[in-house]
Length: 163
Image (cartoon, rainbow, N blue to C red; front, side, top):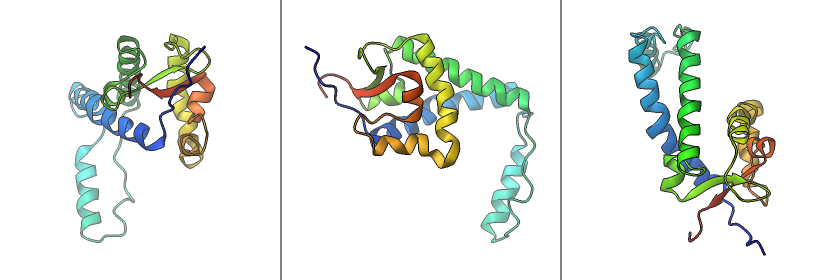
């Protein structure tokens, strides 16, 4: 008889995602920025916009920094690969998920996710982002705490046993 899992809700997943941004995406972003020799985006334009906004200028966001699609794609792919490596190595967890003791599993078997599920879930984040983040917000309202990306990939986020 299979034990009912304890589903991870919206806020614990939000915390894990925030930690992953700090520990995965930010370091990858810094590396990509330096590899691009500053050509990924115009950091000075960000600084100028911030100074204008802080001085009360309502036109601070009228001019956006130029970005390089090549370096942006490299960043996105690098984050995807690093995330999948953690999922594989830590059986469905990234550093943020590991820290808060949650992991991603197959929704039917509660076993480790497959590579196909990992890729589908990663691309599912794009779908979850559309329409004002509804794909993420539904986690708060579903009994099984699954977001759109989970539904697309056949995954669910649960607490590790013992937590």
